[in-house]
Image 1 (tube, rainbow, N blue to C red):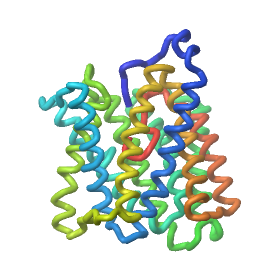
Image 2 (image 1 turned 135 degrees about the vertical axis):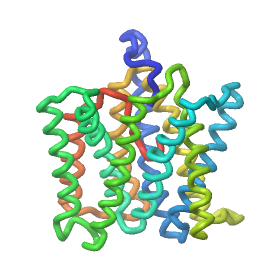
Image 3 (image 1 turned 90 degrees about the vertical axis):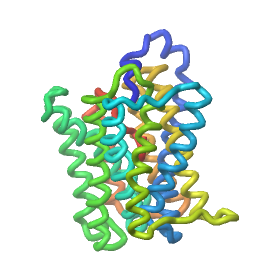
Amino acid sequence: MTQRSTAAPRSRASRVPLLAWAILLVAGGSWGATYSLAKIAAESGAHPLGIALWQGIVGAAILTITETARRRRLPLDRRHLWFYLLCGLLGTAIPSTLYYYAAPHLPAGVLAITLGLTPLITFVGAVALRVDQYAMRRLLGVALGVAAVLMIALPETSLPERAAAIWVVAALAAALSYATENLLIAKIRPPRTESLTLLLGMMLVATIALLPVVVATGSFTPLAWPWGAVEWAIVGMAAINVFSYWLFIYLVTATGPIFATQMAYVVMVSGVLWGMLIFGESHSAWIWGALTVMLAGVALVGQKSEGKSGPDA
């Protein structure tokens, strides 16, 4: 996430409290819908790799138009290209594909809950790399995150089918990929380059990396006309990702990172609610318990560095 501001002046934050809360709810609530949209696209016959490719194409197109209008050039020196490659793969291509493979097999709400592991894994990695400090309170938060995952995967009544447990592992691998990207951003992010510009480079690299894989596997998903469920879901996901990421950057700049990272809570809760609204999902006590425990774990860990708060941020 953006490093342009690590702390907002108190007076600036206090001038827009209602606007900040509105943005938090709109961006987080929109981001939570992407899990249901992914499920719609995958269940409608779109191949996961094809969905991931279109996410890169549409996202890169939106960002190209935005950056052209802002007269921002994409840096192409070795440092930036290395950043685009690593973060484009770990923050977009790999986790998106994993989520799209898991989407037809898991409730959208469960997919959203697994997002909570991203800040927890990020903290563990940051401590291991000595870029963050160990604290018992935060270690307890990690333990609660692990407990939440076990509450989803182990009980026989937590998931619609026991065979779906393997897809929980795929969703967890996506969270691990996001967390790895967060650590790389902290380590190798080029200074003085705006986040939207970096995101454009990441999207372009992810698209270029996915294209030969999609062609080789014959998994390209054409967008038919008139648009149906697949087309609206794919384009909607890409637009929401760019829109919500832009709002997140605004929040960090206007109010500081501590307030902005609360978006993770909104994304998890809204992801569950969107799944109930669109698919009529009903969850067992284990899943509701896992959501509560995961929210508590994320609160205890309390991200200090800028991490992802949603898919493909």
